[in-house]
Length: 155
Image 1: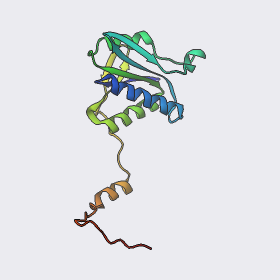
Image 2: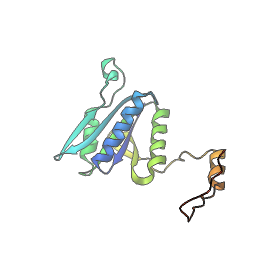
Image 3: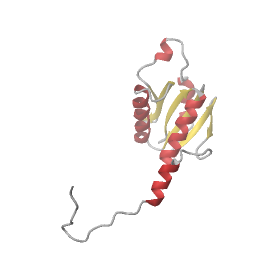
Image 4: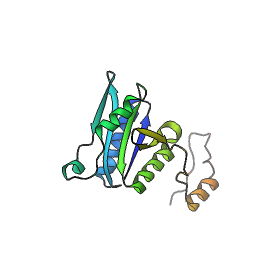
């Protein structure tokens, strides 16, 4: 099992990530054990856990609330985190996908105790397949008309 953290610089971005994790988990896009959203409200660290705490009810793996609270207390006042606990392979894939889609806008970390080890930009991201890359290279911009009416062939 691996615990990863995605750090956002605003609560709104963190909420967006948490909602995305919630939607992906409910759609069974990836098997995760637990996830949580940590942010500050009026200077106090708040922890929002996902709604279906199946791991806790049946003795499965879960995120230590105290651990993630202490990590967030050491962060900036506007920082928000989404923590995901999953199998190593799944956690790595989630982190890679976040880095691919968001670039340097969000930071990703592996959690070791209460230490965060940044993984942003340290591994290859998803690449276009050969067919996709070829299509992207050969497409020309669509010519724009400078008239109001354009003749189009209809079949």
